[in-house]
Amino acid sequence: MEEEEEKEEEEEEEKEEEEEEKEEVEEEEKEEVEEEEKEEVEEEEKEEVEEEEEKEEEEEEKEEEEEEEKEEEEKEKEEVEEEEKEEVEEEKEKKEEEEEKEEVEEEEKEEVEEERMKRRRRITRIVKKSWMKERKE
Image (cartoon, rainbow, N blue to C red; front, side, top):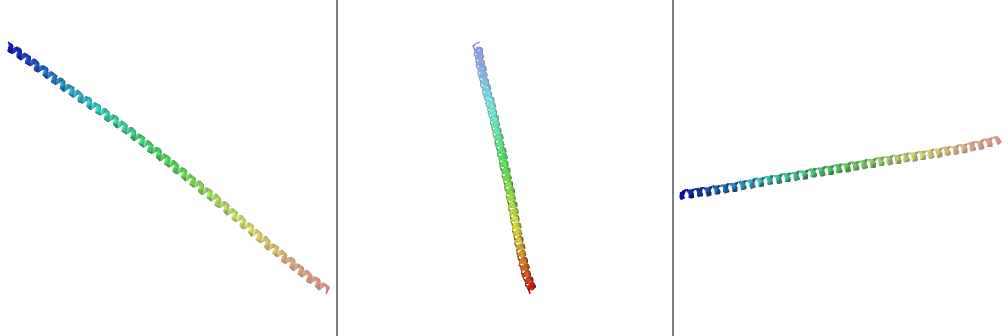
């Protein structure tokens, strides 16, 4: 009878030990699962942060490109305006030179006309004198 009790006790102890081991194993597995889940969540958060940073970087690059394009367009616009201004100035100078040339030609023409008139009057005077002289004689 005592042996039976002992055997029962032993079985009871064994059963308790197995139960404890089983609980420990379950606890360890539970902890591993929790750790894995925690790592997964951290990894996902890390990926989200990286994606957000990448998105912000792309946005910044886009803004920089737009700014550069805007500056380039402004520069081109200024160059075109400068060229147009120079063309207008050149046209103005050309026109002034043309007017000056016309004035000089007009003055020369007037001088030639004046010289012609002087010669004509002189000739007329000489002819008149000569005619008067002939008449006197």
